[in-house]
Image (cartoon, rainbow, N blue to C red):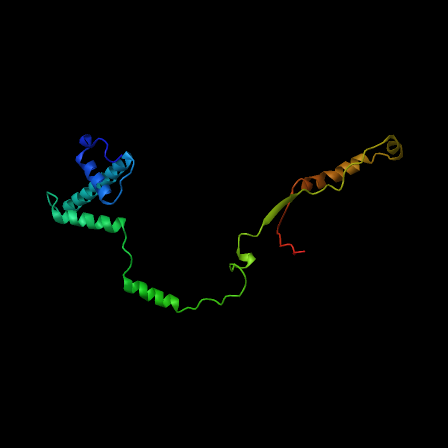
Length: 181
C-alpha cells in the first residue's frame, strides 16, 4: 500500500511516506498520509498566523525569524505542557511520603472500604399504594329493608379519605447480606 502510485504523489505526501518508512511503518492505509498532511498544514498555518500577529504587534512590515521562533515556542508550550522540574517533584514526593499509610487489617482477598462507603449496596424504592379502609360493601335486598338512608353519610365520610389513598407511599431501604446457612 505504501508504494502505490509514487509518480502522482505530491512532494509533501512523499515526505510523509518517507517519515513513516523511517519509523518502521511499512503497511498503512492511504488515508493515513492525508491525515498527516492535514495535521501538518493546520500546524503550519497556525504558526504562520501567530507569527504574523507577533510581527504586527512589533509594528514590523514582514515576518522575520524571531516571530517564527516565538510562534513555534508558544505553540509547543501551549499544545504540549512541560512537566514540573525534577526538584519540585522530589520535594512534593518527600512531603507526601512523610504521612504514613493507614494500617492494613489482615484478611483474605482485596481490602475493600466499608459497605456504607461503596455504591455496591443495593437500594430499592418500592411504591406501596395505601389501601382504602372504607370500601363500600355490596348492598343486598335485606340490607335495604333494615337500613334507613345510611348511604349519604358513608359516601360523605369516604370522600375525604379517598384523596390521600391515591398518593402512593415511597419506601427506601438498603438490603443487608443474608447470613450464610
